[in-house]
Image 1 (tube, rainbow, N blue to C red):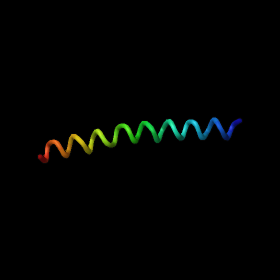
Image 2: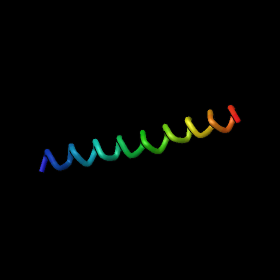
Image 3: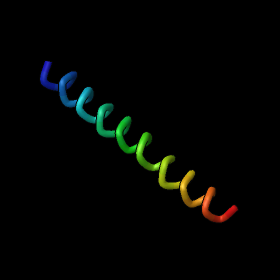
Length: 33
């Protein structure tokens, strides 16, 4: 159970990073255009 919980936390962290990083890239692309 401990391993599953740790994996869930990692997935949540990756999900948040994947959501925030594209926003920064998109904002830079929009500014460059």
